[in-house]
Length: 344
Image (spheres, one colour):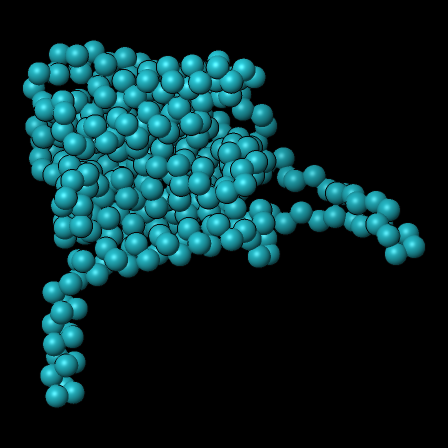
């Protein structure tokens, strides 16, 4: 939505700059309701408690020193310690960041145990996720999962945009200003390199969907024999737990309508997990959040945009092309041989 201003000039200088019209009441949301905040915190907190309890009983059934587990826990600690609210005192800030980061990393440690145990019981969807954190990261299965997830993430962008547009224009929903405006602005605009927190937040959103979709979809699949029904139930459970102000998908209010808008997108992610693997889910979720946050930056800094988002999009595009080259390397090699033979 374009804002219009009235500029008053006196003697060649700007004397007044007025914004004469308010945005439509049905478009921008009111401040984040307290009841929404409560409902979006309680399910996640309850699930974390359940995961910690399950993880305590399952610790002896997995390799606790696996490389992928160590990398995930350390990465979560570093990310959590760097984004915790700062305190006036330098010493207090360090203590809060250290212990807060350790607490979140500990919860992540138990999540890795439960996630591994749950997925390995129902299928091979975990193999590429493990490969990503060792010397097989550049293998064809990993590249295919990343490329596949990227395409699904781009499709999710279009699907979510259509759902939010229909909901806010025809179904009486309100755009969630907290998710769409206030949090991205606070996260990105007060940083000299806004692309850094944008990438970090996109990784955070990818982790959220990896944990929720991977655990709940594999858990439901153990008890529901029909794959299509298990996928529907898993998507519904994730939609009921996932809504939060830090997720860009399904950014509408009120809470029960947010769940309805989230469900189709999460159905796609649950289908991706059931049909392919966990790494494809991670790639799709990251692509969605990364492109959404870059779009936010480019719109805010219109018409030219900051340099960082363009560089990040370029690097990301080259990375995706690299995965495509790995996936189609045999075809590329054969084409090169044919081309060389044609010029002999």
